[in-house]
Length: 228
Ligand SMILES: N[C@@H](CCC(=O)N[C@@H](CS)C(=O)NCC(=O)O)C(=O)O
Image (cartoon, rainbow, N blue to C red; front, side, top):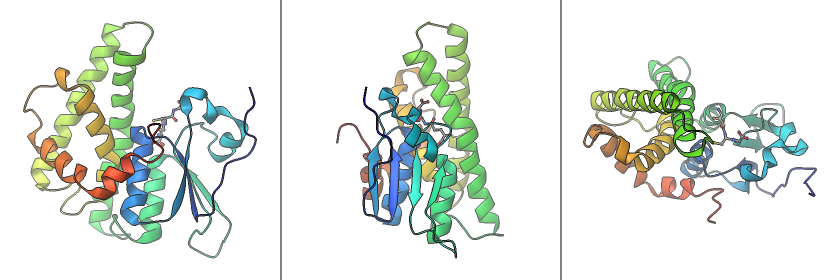
């Protein structure tokens, strides 16, 4: 099978290598919200493109998303390559001064706390729940229950937090933490609706609607989608 040896590139300042999975969608949403110019390159992980040498040079961990910025801030004008969706969100927020409060403010660390909660909890647990319920070659009840229970617990934590703030995840402002959590929670509550208690997450329902109605979010969710 012929494989690419170098990264596809376009002429925009930012090059995004991604796929419209929840981890990829976070970055599509952020780029649309920030109004930045970018070229989007679809990486089909079902075809193992992430294991090709050119991609491993961008991310040695062989996972989407990856972002290359040819116009990074600061003295060093060399292109900046960055992987891990949480790191990319912090980078874009710092580059533009939007959706993350400035250094030293309490608000910044509250947002980062919830961003890390998504990266260390929601992503891995929802991902494993989905794997054992939908993709695993064997049916392993222990694993199915363990990850589904943990996903439900995390949803309850989020619902309680949204009840407390009455608006967005880390307070009154819409931030990169909302952008990171939204695609995973939307995916999970849609696909596992029959396994979740009815009306258990009314604060999440409100928040999903507010964010899901944003035109930038609607557009961002489709970036690098296989459906075009
Ligand atoms: N912690 C990483 C997770 C990225 C990740 O798991 N990406 C998946 C798609 S959602 C992937 O590229 N999987 C390909 C593979 O595992 O081979 C991030 O948030 O960027």
